[in-house]
Image (tube, rainbow, N blue to C red; front, side):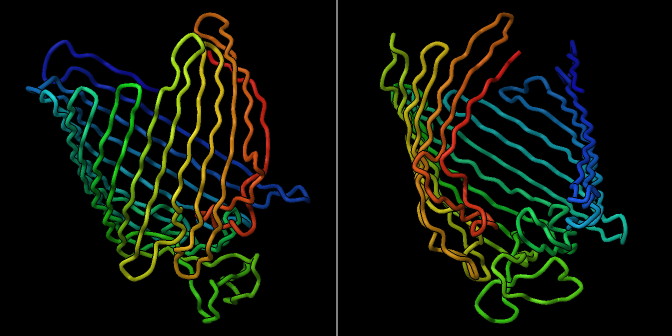
Length: 399
């Protein structure tokens, strides 16, 4: 549910609110027909915003947000104990324009409490996040800007209370209820050309993260390989020598630094009765190091790509090529991942059927070069590559 009320006078011009309730359940059915694992999740979320009238050049909003979550997984594939999480936050966001300058300011305070239902393990976190940004527009087509902030994140229920096999990622996860808040200090610098036949967007970023939370592998038997275990590891405590066994990972914290860039360019090649044709090229990269030594696990490598997009009235089509380079700067106990190229095409035609309704017929082709593509970010890259050459035909209705 959502709604709003406009004030005719006073400090505030509008109040907006929304409320959501989600009740989710699914069962993993064994071959015998019995329920192997039952997952249930109930969540409430409410948000209210007071939009104040302009104060000089400043516009802004004051808000309150509340969340309540009850999660349980019971059975063979349950790796997190039934848990509850409550969070309440207040925030203020303000923005102002000074001719060619645009400023944004924000602050958010949050309290989160999480606990397991059966054994009473609990964790509470007080979070404070702040941000500020400035943009300067010049020559009518260019923008330069900088933004900085301090953001805090509370560990998730999985990071706090996991204790069992997580079969979707082929891991055996062990959480830590004593994990503290993750605090990140961030700086972004960008330069954009936002109008004209040729546009671009170039961003540099740097993040200094205190108490960074991540899943860490270990080598308890000193054989040079990450520990792998069976699903009954809590009972046996045994490390096994099997490549397809579960990877043993623990939720840990240490300081870390990240830096990288994102760049995108677009050029309109044709824009006439033949339709519009746009050329796009892009690249992104991130590197991260742990203060305790070594690289951050499962970081994606350098990527770059390009493509052509054609559109004429109700018809559109496009082709794209993406190159993901080899990741050979892996973290401790990680294996390198080969690079790969993905060639994709798509096309579609939209038929209007009146009253803002339409039907779109579309087709897509992915991995047309049939590459053996494996993502370095995946826990199961050695077991499950990305799909090979494939096609999809579909119909989408909008109303």
